[in-house]
Every structure is written in structure tokens, then in C-alpha cells.
Length: 68
Image (cartoon, rainbow, N blue to C red; front, side):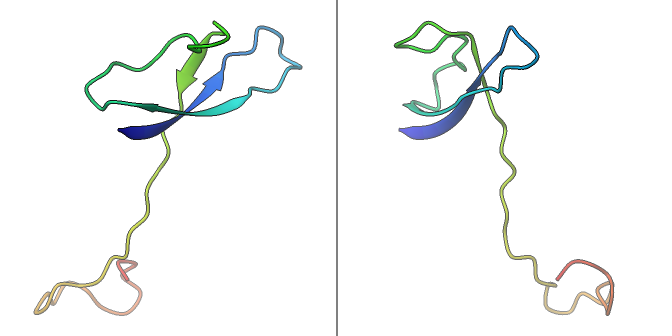
């Protein structure tokens, strides 16, 4: 099971969205309503991070290239 982050979709512009972590299978489609409250929600896409290093023998990488 994967854990996804969802947020409510506020109907009022002054209302801040509420965040939820919900476990579900990767095969399941994204939820549109909170399973307990029925509030309208949407999945939040979060960017991952990873360590980037130049490949051995890659001459295109050099100081200031931004890959590492």
C-alpha cells in the first residue's frame, strides 16, 4: 500500500485546504471525496528528490553544470 497526500478543495477563498495522508493501492484511482467525511479532495503531487552524480567517463559534466 502506498501513502498519498490529499488536500480538501475549499469552497471559500479564505478557507485553507486541509491535508490528509491516505493509504491506498497504486492500482486504485485517485480519490475525489474523503472516505470518512465526504469532503471534496484532490491528490497532491509531491516532487521527489534524489542524488545526482555524473556518470563515470561522462565528459559533458563539469564544474557548474548543475548535475551534482
